[in-house]
Image 1 (cartoon, helix red, strand yellow):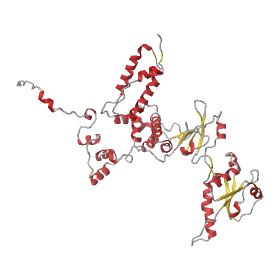
Image 2: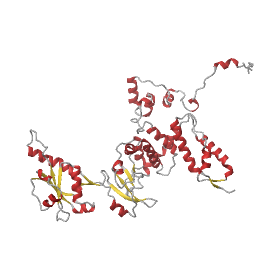
Image 3: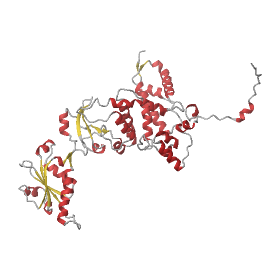
Length: 450
């Protein structure tokens, strides 16, 4: 009989009764069993074997699994830290991609420090935006989806605040098509628009006017037709609620409000795109689909875009992922990101070591930094804190507060010369004294003197 692939029933038979440690809590034991079986199933589905050796395959799989378990008392933390020692050489290789017309990517040691310190405001926030619709080339993708933030201040050539300004010839047409609410306002800001920039962003004056009125509720906009010689927008500001104090008259207070507050808010207004997005670069995946790479913005704004494929789109800010998708998604992201950073120079790091580190960072349902600020002071004794960072400060602080150490940690045992609770010392042997009564005395032997 020739070799063939294993069927799903045969794979299930091989993985049945896999000896998962029984001391684990039920939910954790179930999750561990699912992950291990998934890994084995992926490997067994590619194997071609003789059907006669199924029992031997099952015995071999069970033996490999049992021997791969970490022994009781093994220093898994030390092994994990040793496997990540190669990150000190990352800075030498991180400049090879400098100068390319691509999104800014933080690599090497700076990125590793960002992940370990759980930086809430990273220098660079990169993301991949996958659209729902498929596009044939980058030109159609750029023309269909506009992601970079466009502020109104970048579209304005000049801005002039005016009091009781005269009406132009297009005002009667605006009164017929829209409303006359602007007539109750005395102050207005006349914006002279740059037609080249408006055309380049595929915008119209009506769209800009609608965004201004939507985001600034106390404004009313009257705009000229797109075919005019000069593109002008008159932003009328409702100043009826503005009152003066003893230092200014009412008109001076309204003028200062229009010039210093409203005009500044208009220039910072986001007209199109996603707030904070700086630049985008079209990329083609191996499957042939086009997508965007870029920097800036937040994950919730990217996922809220109507053209966004929310299943594939993701950014590299762990706090955005925690806020939007939860701690499990954050754990998966940290594992993949650390593996990508550590393997940047081609070196191999066993994923289990990274998983151990990330599990320690996310075990409390939140992200804990791997530094002195992320250490929970209640879980570590004073000797362990002294051996980590700021030895003098931690020693004085522990002495002032009269802290005691139970000498159960590895650092405390090494400092005091006590056998650490690791390896063979991780278990205690208790002697049954009642059994000593039945022990026969060995016959004494005469000592031979030389």
